[in-house]
Amino acid sequence: MEYTERKQTLESDVAVIGGGMAGICAAVAAARNGAKTTLVQDRPVLGGNASSEIRVHVNGVTHLRPNGIPERETGIIEEILLHNRFRNPQESYPVWDHVLYDFVVRERNLELMLNTQAIEAVMSGAKIESARCWQLTTETEITIGAELFIDCSGDGLLAASAGAVFRTGREAASEFNEKYAPEVSDGWQMGASLLLLSRDMGKPMPYEPPSYVIRYEAEKAHPKRAIKQFVDGFWWVELGSEFDIIAEQETNRHKLMGYMHGVWDYIKNSGEFPEADTYALDWVGSLPGRRESRRFMGDFVLSEGDLLGHRHFEDVVAYGGWSLDEHCPGGIENLSEPPSYFHEGFTEIYEIPFRSLYSRNVPNLLFAGRNVSQTHIALSSSRVMATGSLMGQAVGTAASLCLKKGVLPRELAQNHVSDLQEQLLRDDAFIPRRPANDPDDLAPRASRITASSTCSGDAALLTDGVSRDVGDEIHHWQSEGLPADVVVEWERPVSLSRVEIKCDTNVRRNILMRKDSKVTETFWNDVPQELLKALALEARVGGEWVPLGSIESNRTRLITFSFDSLETTAVRIVMKETYGSPNATLFEVRCYGA
Image (cartoon, rainbow, N blue to C red; front, side, top):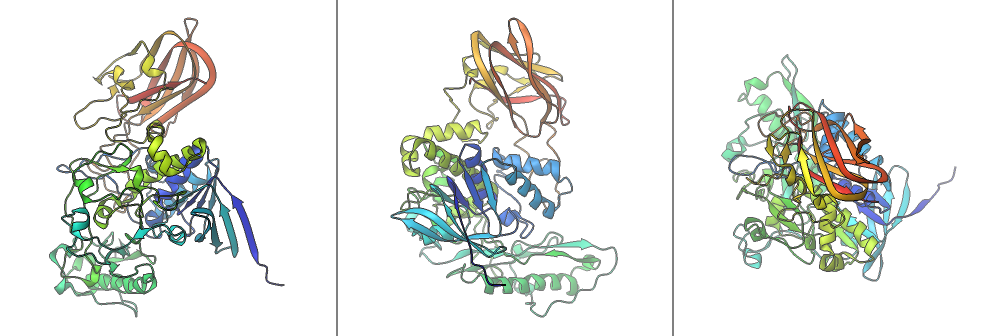
């Protein structure tokens, strides 16, 4: 047989590069909002650092000070985590890969390409015309044309090859007035980590390290590197770089594998941990999870002061709240310093503006995840994956709006950012200090909203534009027992074809999958008990209640009923059952015409 050169050309409205959590959310958001979307992922599985290949937790606003209470992300990232709770109760990382795969491939308008890397941007003037890609498994060169490109790959090879302006390393403290930045700028980037998992085998398990092991010099280690547990691995087995962390990846990978086994050899053979005698390695990472490389500059550069000062942005589209968690230069080769400085934690969430999520010089290019327009210090917080997922939903939604309005991201930011925010809010993203005010929503025009019973809150709050309780502010209605119902009434008949409801999933408790299956006041490893399970919708037509639909096994916070358009004077939401809570809680009701 002769060698066959394989080439393929695809056309999309939106091309998303990178299938980590940010990329998944960007692609799903774009597709759901009407854009023909292609998602390109260079690995055989989705999830990026969260995948079974690396196994980092999908953290976000996981613990705010002083009590460690989260302000959990909703929207697409919550859908994914809930989908995992139903499909993967055993909390298996390989099954999690398949949960993510299912979540993506079921989406209309979305084509997934695995084992495919975007290696070069083909330009038309300043804009990207197409992405030249290589699919490893089929030996095929694939050219993907699109109107808009979203680089969520972390390292941003496509964006860099397009000439998008980027930075690496640490800014000087004086440039952005950052108190935790170094006095003089340098090239240091936070390190990549390798994790491991161990398992109790119930019998003595000797361990002999491999040939490439690098001895762990525990006697030189900072006290904050103390080994308090050894089942779930050590995030501080990491290596940073002062130069080109991407070019050094393979060298660092080899060294990290040596350091990882060195730490395990110390645990097993130093005599300091007799309780590890029956433990053996159950899984070891081979692909380091990177925290930092390129950061692409937009019209705004998010910095330390914006986060710590809780600056309000008119174009806010996402939020964060992980601590300023700057890992030390050198990683495990700098044992005398703490593995991370954890400069400051947050008592409330901070805002992320849309102007930080697109390129300042490549007009049809957007970003989400750790490669957005920010300083090194700001990245130390915003880099966590649930925060990146919010950025992903924002830019995916923005791309679809750009197409509908015939504009590019900068013009969307200047003239249509309110439309972007409204769509995000409708799709169950939360935007700080930005209540919804959708002119097409008929529910706020209702003459009254009543409930069969009330334990807390008020049914009138279901149209106040805020779909969660914020601090001490109540924005919910909660029934006193079940069944219960809420009725939305209008003085004159309205034409309806869609009702959208936001129920309760307890955003003050984390539902991310963890390696330790943690269950506490703020972590949960099952389906949220507060989630509404069974409900029905009715409309009052000619004085009679007419059924419009029912759901017996709801699995999402945002619940949608679509039906043939009808004239009605009232709709009634009948709540029958939750996943364990004795009461039902709603945060929002929206009603739309044809």
